[in-house]
Image (tube, rainbow, N blue to C red; front, top):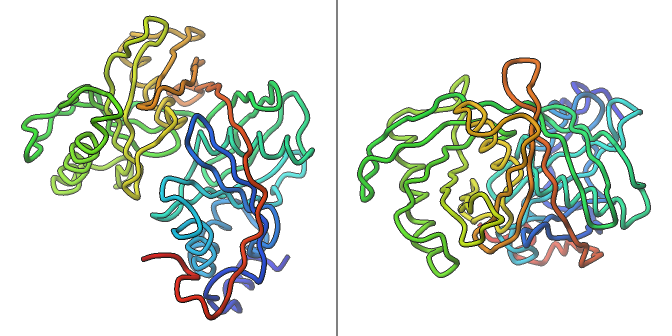
Length: 329
C-alpha cells in the first residue's frame, strides 16, 4: 500500500463501489452490521484514524453504495475490515453508517467478531482490534457470544439541564463511550416498541436543542447520540434504553458505546462499583451485560458482552446504469 500522503495526493475520488464487493451481514441484538471483507477501497498505510480520513475524503461513494438504501436497511452500521497497523492485532476496522463515520461501535464490534469467527479467522479467546479511536480487546466466548473491552469512557458533565422545545426542561449527562452521548431519564412516554415514533421525536428535539445551545462534547465535538433511559419491566434487568443514532435510526441493540457511556455516568455518581454487573436492555428487549474497571486517565474501562448472528454472505454489484448505485440521498 502506498504511504498515506502520496495516496491522498494522487487518488481521484471514485463514485461508488469496485465491480464486486463481498459483505457479511449479521445482527447484534437485532441491530445490523455489514462487514466489507473483500473488494473494499485501498486506504494506504498509517493509523486507523488517518485511514478513516482517506476513506471519507476519497472513497465516500463506497460508504454510500454499501450502507444506504436500497442495498441496506437504514439502521445498519458498516465496518470496513482493514489490515491492522500492529501485526499483533487480529484486524483493523473502520465503522460507518448512513450519516458518516464512527469512532467506535459496540454492537458492530460484537458483530465483527462473530463474522470473523464465522469466516474461520478468529478462534475462541482474547484478541485485539484496532479502531480509529484506539485498540479494543475482544474475547470470543463462543460462535455467537462476544465480550469486548472498550476504549476508556468518561462522564464529561453530570446533571446538565437544557430547555427543549416541546419537552420543557430536560436534565441529563454528557458522556463519551467511543461516541458522544447525552443520556437522560426524562422519558416523555413509556419505553415500549409502540412508542418508538414518539421517542424518536423526543430524542431529535433534544439533539437539536444541544446544537442550538452550543453544548458539545470535548473539544467542540458534536453530541450525535441521544440515549433515553428508564426502568425495565423485567426484574433481572437494571434499565431499558432508547438510543437515537446520528442518521436518525434507533439502535435495536442496547448500544455498546451507549452502555459504556451509561457505566461511566453510574461510576461517577457512585451508583455502580468496579466489577459490578449492569444489565442493559434495548427498546426491543435484547440485552448486554457490562462491568468496568478504573481507567488510567480517570475514566473507566468498560467490558460489554452480547451476542451476534451472521445471516448473509453477499456480493454487492455496482451497475453504472443504476441511478441509485450510490444509494438514496
